[in-house]
Image (tube, rainbow, N blue to C red; front, side, top):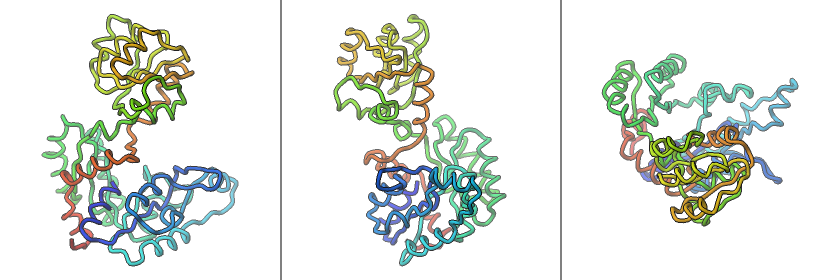
Length: 338
C-alpha cells in the first residue's frame, strides 16, 4: 500500500519521503540488522536517506531481552530525530504502520503512539472478511477520532464486492469515515512462488529451475482415498498439494488437475511414474523431511502475506490502486494539490 501511494505521488510531482518507524521483522546478517521491506522500498523508489533513518527502531531479540530484564529503553527521541531528517524538504511523508495496533507496545511505539508523537493522520487498511470487519473500523474511529483520515477496504472477495460497495461503504461514510478505495482480493498477489516455498520449507527441489518461478495461490492436503481425490483436487487452481511421499496415487491425481507444486513429506522420493508425469505437466516437486501436518503448518505461514519483492507483483498492485483507489480525494483530505 505504501509503495502504491508513493509511486503515484512521485508521478504527480510530489517530493516524497518514506519511513517504517517500528520494525518487528528484522533481518540479521553477520554485519548488521535491518528491515528488508524498508530496504526494498528505499531501493525501488530511489530514496537517498540512510536505511537507519528510514527504519530507525528495530525490535530485535536483544532489545526485547533488555526490556524484559527491566532495563529502560526509550526510542521516542530517536524516532523523532530520524523523522525530522527524512521529512526535510518533502511535500509528503508516508509512514508504514505495524501489522496490528498492539505491535510496538513493548517499546511504547504502537500505531496510535506514533501518530501522536509525529502528529501524523492515519489511513486505515482494513482487510474485509465479513461484516465483523465493520466493528474493527468503527472501533478504530472511536479510538483515533479526528486523526483517522479514512479507510481503504482491502482483499474483498468477488462475491462480497457488491455488498461492500453498496452497503458497507455508504454505512461508513454516513458515520464520518471516508472510504478511499475498495480493493478486490487478487490470488496472484497473495500467492507465493515455488522458490519461496523451497526456501521456507528447506526441501529438495526436483524439476527444471524455471518452474520455481510458478505462483502457488492455495494449499491443499492430500490425505483421502484415491477415489475421491480427483474431484477434490479440481476445486482449486494453481495450488500446491502436500501429501505423503508414499502416496503415488494421490500425487498422480493431483497432477491431473491445476497443480503448480507437489510437496512430498517424509523424504520419500516419488516413483518414476510420478516424476515422468510431473515432467510432462512442468510441475516441480519438493521433498521435505517433516510429516504432512508439520509441513502444512509451516507452509501456511507464508500464505496471505503479500510479498512484493518482484516487479510483476508490484506493477499489478499499482495498477489495481489506479483503478480502485481515489487519490484525488486523499490528496484533498491531506491538503495536497496535485
